[in-house]
Image 1: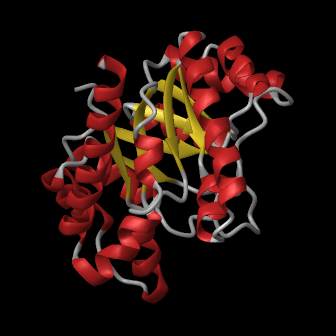
Image 2: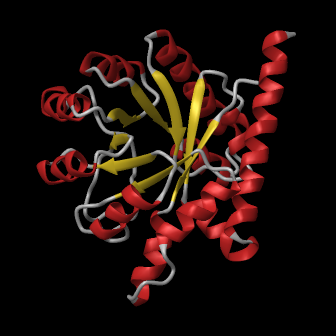
Amino acid sequence: MNRLRLGVNIDHVATIRNARGGRHPDPVRAAKLAAQAGADGITAHLREDRRHISDRDIERLSHEIDLPLNLEMAATHEMLAIALHHRPHAACIVPEKREERTTEGGIDAWGQRDRLAPFVGALTDAGIRVSLFIEPERTQLEAAKALGAPVIELHTGAYCEAAANGDDNLRARLYESVCKAASYGASLGLEVHAGHGLGFDTVGPIAGIAEIRELNIGHFLIGEAIFSGLDAAIRRMRALMDEARARSDGRNTA
């Protein structure tokens, strides 16, 4: 089976911690539990306003977990300096607005080519695998390729929102956009990832797209952990991903 990797985003463990202050719950402990439950990597977004993950969290994650660390970061000189200091396995460049509740869409790799190029270059030169969080559009894929980013992460938020709203027609169109983008990205030689908004009810179709190599999922898993525990939530997500990939592989070899 063409195994699909699962990156678990532990940002919102830190959100809960920060609501009251102190050290509990500990996002590093969550990362270790995620590893035991079947995660293939850990994702953490160090925002400019430090609303959840802190600098100390990144330092501890860099030294205390065995899984690859994917640092989500804005394209700023402050964040670049932090990434170059800690040297995570990967850095995913995302758009960031101080007023947004969460990342609301992909970065405009096409429109910001000149601004992004030095960041992609510096991270790459440091041996950090660079990915760009983008919308599933051809121009964005082509821009990522031109910038030299080896990985792209397709934004699945609109697809998941359409599913939550029960808009089946829009959901189908957006799903097709993700499929086409994954195929085109792979044809360009890019490693294709996907994420944002995925849950138990939406992960299957995305996980079944053969060109996608990794999913990054966080908010849903942390929310579900309140009811079932983090271990159970991750194991169920892992199983749903594996089942969808097995069905996809079966179709591809039929």
